[in-house]
Image (cartoon, rainbow, N blue to C red; front, side, top):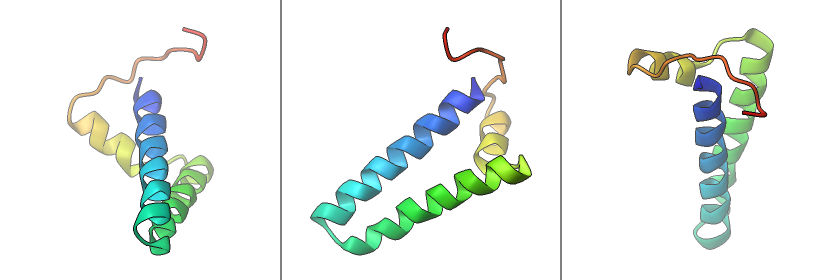
Length: 68
C-alpha cells in the first residue's frame, strides 16, 4: 500500500513540475531531476523519507501485488 502512495506522489510531482517547466519557467525541471534522483537513491539504499512520513501518519504497509 505504501509503495502505491510513493509512486503516486512521485508521479504527480514529476507531472506537475513538467507542466510548470513548460508554462512557467524551465528551472522547474530541477524538481523533476530531484525526484528522479531520490527514486534512484531509494532503490539502491532501500531508504525512503516519504515512506517514513507515510508510516508516521498511519498508512498501513499492506503487501499487495500489482495485479490486485
